[in-house]
Amino acid sequence: MNRNPVWTFVAVILGGLLSVSPVVAAGAEDEDATNRAQAIDAINNELKMMATQLERSRDDDTDDSIQLAIRQTDGMVSNIDFLKNVKGDDKIANAMIEHYPGYIDSFVIAATALAKLKNAQVRQNEKMLWKRCAERSDSTKTQVHDELARQLEQVNEISNARDVAQNFSVSNAGWSNVTRQMHNAADAIWTIYDMQLKNTREKCSPPK
Image 1 (cartoon, one colour):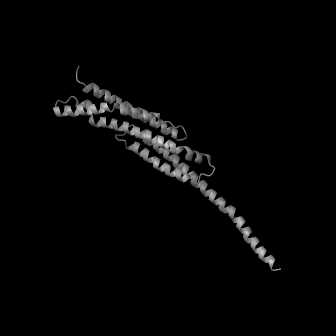
Image 2 (cartoon, one colour):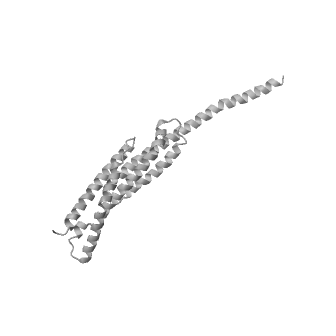
Image 3 (cartoon, one colour):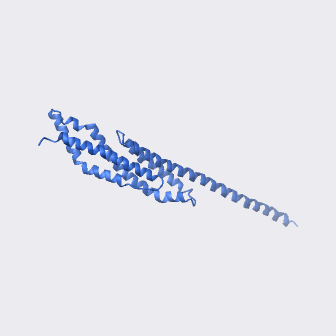
């Protein structure tokens, strides 16, 4: 007679545990889904900011915007690492985890090359050899000669940097706009660089 209350008590406790466990699991899944959505949104926003910084770099007087775009990838890497813990079966999350680290590596290489091109164009602006080469003083002529020689020696290196930036190509999601802005920036900066280099050569070359 005493056994029935004991088994009844155990049954109630077990029944309670069984009824609580699905609720706890569901709550954890909901939290993962929320965190996953927030991480994906953060990654997409970082892509938008990278594209914006590349667009600004065309008219900037420094390579600051490009460096900001490169540093933006640090936040993206952190969000991808976080996403690994809450990815579940989400296709977008799993695709980001699988592909985005490689995209980031390629982007950093291309953006670093773009910064080299930008810095060469900025140096041209600072030195303004096409204006200074007509000056008569010997010291100025020497400075102009040395700087022109330096710029001419770097032409192939800068041209290669432009090619590296232009060869970056990722069409997946927000990366397509990053790719477009990378190409636009490389084209715009190179156009200015090449025009100023030709102008300098024309103005500073000795008469034949």
